[in-house]
Length: 69
Image 1: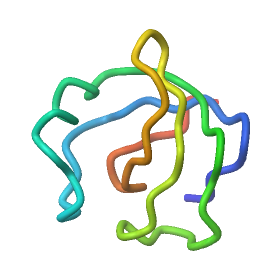
Image 2 (image 1 turned 90 degrees about the vertical axis):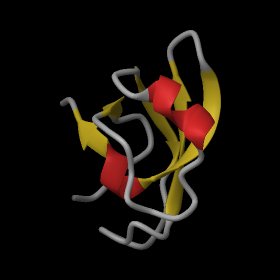
Image 3 (image 1 turned 45 degrees about the vertical axis):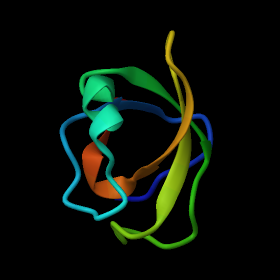
């Protein structure tokens, strides 16, 4: 899956990445937009920046995101 700036996304579930922190569990199910994609495709260690509705901006692992478009 390739992420691009401006794509609509949803946090589909908890990541298996070690950078996942417990506070991120509250983000599961949130929708938002990719604001700064990473250049590494399908690399769960590469975090991408997303802006989530009513939650703020976060850097999240790619394996917890799904594209809505």
